[in-house]
Amino acid sequence: MNWIVATLLSAFFLGIYDLCTKHSVRANAVTPVFFFSTLTGALVWMALLGIDAIHPGWLPASLVTDPLTWKQHLQLLLKSTIVASSWIGTYYALKHLPLSLGAPIRATSPLLTLFGAIAFLGERPTWLETLGILTTLASFVGLSFAGAKEGVHFHRNKWFWSLIVGNLFGAASALYDKYLLGTLHFSVPTVQCWFSIYLVILFTPFTLGWKLRLWPRNEFTWRWSVPFIALALLVADYLYFWALRHPDALVAVVMSLRRANTLVAFAGSLILFKELNGWKKLPAVIGILIGIVLTILGRH
Image 1: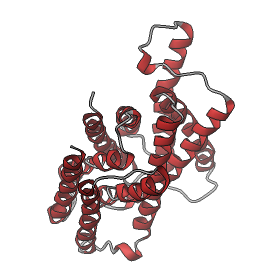
Image 2: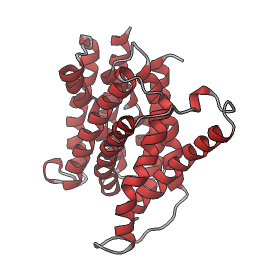
Image 3: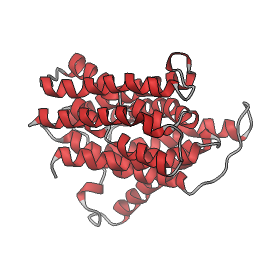
């Protein structure tokens, strides 16, 4: 499969993930959503680990993990810590912001990734790829004006800044993914398996604190979308990791194309959640789409 096609498919499932996340955390306790969604993903991989241990050779190579040293386990634990930090920022933000605002704001993360890729990985995107990513930032400015009409003033809204912090950790995660997969040559299933398991370990203390009411918190209501957060993310991340392993893939371009999930999330926010003023944000979302198209053209 072409790495660009894999990235765009990943973007589609990431959009489904955004919709499931918004459905799960809306007027609901966030911490148990974290825990049960990550537990779902970890159980899938633990089942695959068990099958491979009992019946070696039954699973396709694309689902078989490699044996790891303690150092490699620590490297994947760091990956899970970065992702957990990103999720804490983004989940709480998506709970309080309209998805038609939150999803496009998340789409600005390729700009952060581009700076990191240039500074730390020595990547040199073409001028058209750079223009495509910068178009995302320009669209974000337009989005801020649309958000102000809903009473969401970015400069003084704490959930906006929570989302920005989540984006920063998301960009760091993307750079670290490229290092794990491209430099250290971890296999895709190995990264996905152990990062999913370590996420459960990281979120367990917070879930216990929530259960014991160690801090003021909302009540939790089980929703069908909670496990589907993990299932959509498993597919999205598998395709994303596969794309990053391709020798020609640039991490900044992969992250930019992956932001096509905004289109899925935006459409879902209007159809499923009936968000107000959604159509007023459409020009900014179209700008993001133009940025994606420019990035694809710059790659060829």
